[in-house]
Length: 309
Image (cartoon, rainbow, N blue to C red; front, side):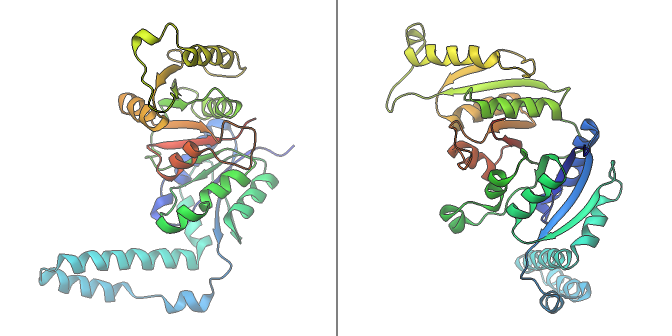
């Protein structure tokens, strides 16, 4: 039987700066293999990458001139140009870039460079290598396109056979406090169980946003007789009987309000370094829940997303 693996997927941009180190720490915790990979687009050619190269000296000279002439706007533009050029160089030789990222990591990763569509390639690699987790960085914001179609990250979550961790916090420290946003569904239970494996020494908290009818208000006087609260409490009791859940610091809280409002309040209070959520509350694995999708696009901290087990 193949040893399980942690798959760290980098797009070679600053958005993925913490991916490899966080994946290595988790691989060490789980005694798993570490794979470090990049999926290159099939349309980039060597001639294109060569034509985009620009010596550092050219940008340095322009920067010196802009600084001496007191042109901060020009300095900012040059900084962006240098960053873009270095990103293109990384894309031109992704294998060398991955080897540079891999230096000093323990366990030492296996390097894999793939070509094609990221969701398809990463899902296929995860299946072949028995990956138990895929670690990604933040996705690039494309305001118009993101409104019209799924982001690459969302496509990966739906296609992947393993849960996905979006890592952007400093990976030097282990996770100390985990906050589960739960609807008491199998998907949220799966996310919490996986988080317990990734952060075995962390403190666990859970919160449930109690949805109210449009325009309704909930007061302390309503608590004893409110049907929705009673139903949520029954769901919580059944949820806590789910095998494999970690010990919670307190029973999962049931808080009236919208999901974003409730999560924001509790996250500010706890300063959790890992939030976990299920992909959806329904049974269709081809769909992402609205809240999971929103959190993936702007995670307040590292975010673990899991499908039902």
